[in-house]
Length: 455
View: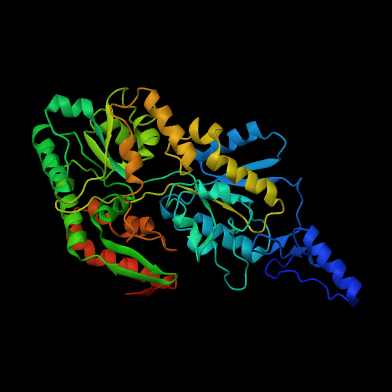
């Protein structure tokens, strides 16, 4: 069995000729190899013996199957096996759990993994219990600097740990205000320009058009949409193992109070947007919905979901709280990792670069706004040229620069904590304002379990 945790070392050379030969060898080869088959490599991590013809195994969720298909079509010469899994959706932590099993076995790691979460780099970049970090370092030559530099500013922040890049973002997930322009015009409503106006309009919708909605609270990313946008300090990662958690501030209470009002009157139902129940009850009845950029293709312009007709869907910039600058949260966006254990890093890097940058996927197939800048520009132009939207999409672009930096990407999943602690409270009719202390305690406890110092 290869010991992937121990970098290879060159054997001691004897004599001037041997020293010269060693220097020449180091110049001409990418890496040194020892008898175990491990190499010290030029990419900043220990590498196993490489085989450019080895099949790569790629793990994707169902929504990224199209990415794998596009790659296979464009690269028929690259042997690839595609495995479907849940993508760690809703903070299931399946990615990390499965890699820990492979670490114990010393074998079985996939070459490439897609995750829906933005917190995986925090653990995948770390050596744990003497085991080599799962994630390959990407910015030490494995992925060209010209490619990395073309990602939208800030897009790779969740992938960057200790100044090194460990994953590539698939798409950006800044939250915006989606709305049905046809319904607003029909009802005679003005688009809100603040969270206070948003709440007031939600109360008006409840009175005048019961059954219509202005948002949802049934998904575990609810805190990223509403609390992050209110600058609630629930997840302020201040260091590699330090976090500030204070959910009883004015910023947290105002978001919770807003939701308490709109949950009670029925305009932000506690139903997931990905359920048949939601589609059945609210198709044609979504007046507004704060949510991530990827709602465009995943929820609204999707025959299997709300299927909003052409010319009705508009998008507005993130709402501010009155007297403040608008900020927004970030809901996933997806990350691609290359395994440091891969026996074919060349093919793995080719795959990850393709699915994050190539027009064949990111522009022509992907439903969300690409994180790769050039692809993002083309995606916007294609979407606007389709005539589907009732407005231009500049709000989506602008929102990418408005993500509040006070909410970080720690190892623990805020989505999992919310789903376990707050979703049942909402279901049972409890007040979110009243539940804030329990939420804070749950965050602190999970952070400490994961080795964080909490302040």
